[in-house]
Length: 166
Image (cartoon, rainbow, N blue to C red):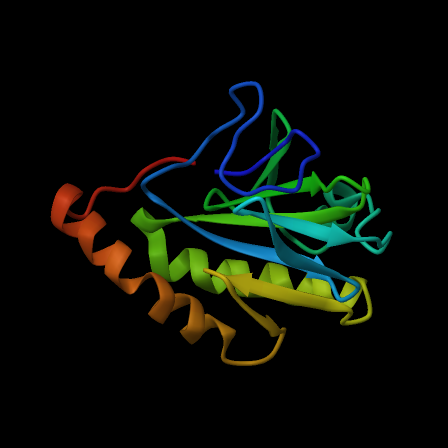
């Protein structure tokens, strides 16, 4: 889940915008000048940047991503959800959500999307996967896979080879 309330905190949803849940995995993209910190036991994003102030719908549609706008989200290639979130300083960061029912495909498309975003902002982006922050580099796909394989296996055990629509 993500926050749409400009508080920079992960773990909340605004106005019923939630599209994915248990069947999801998450990657957060931050400008290099922003970071996560703990405030009153809540993980928030702090810092300022304007590098994500881009018309992502236009940029990504020109890069052969199939895009569907759904509320405050962009659904990309039917398996990745992208949301621009603002912190208390009103600076934007991006939360990407992938679907476990198409886990490998979602990771591949998510990495392609991250590469596109990184190139658009001159590689001034850091990636957060389950609290581990790193620069964008080759091999992040395996980090995402290893970080979420246990959740993916639990999903498969619970639901089998079901294909969920995003």
